[in-house]
Image (cartoon, rainbow, N blue to C red; front, side):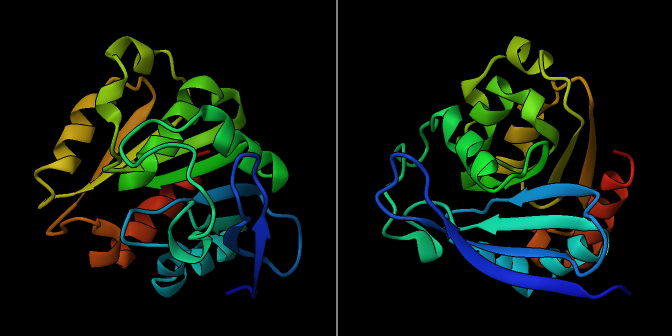
Length: 211
């Protein structure tokens, strides 16, 4: 396996009262073949992607991966969120994050709470997104099937077999994305990537290899 370089940093986004913390992984040699932005749920942070090995897995797969702590969560607690929990954040928020970190075009991995950030970004700036990996995100009901059908970005819809609430609701709405595949993680609840990181990493890297 190739070696991996891990770093930490912060990025200032307009409207946030403080910088956002992030963790980054990348191959130690050669250029990264793509950039990946990892978001997280309400009870989690970028630390989860470090602990279960996703950051390392992505770097070993030749990617540059950046996991940010969303505003008011993790080590970005002092940064003011651009919208209340459960409301759609302005699409320009993640656009600026990606611009500041030179991530475009970016693969966006978006579990649960982070749907309030990723979905507006996807619907308004799909030209900046290389692929979309929603993992039972919230706010999928705030867009119409017609809006989803306008998105041409390759998408990997992931949810746990035991996630009969948010996972099934988000799948029903996101099924209107025209260029998608679905991975149901057997025996996994919510969040499924924590329950079964090995299956998660296999599904993710297999998908990235198709891009």
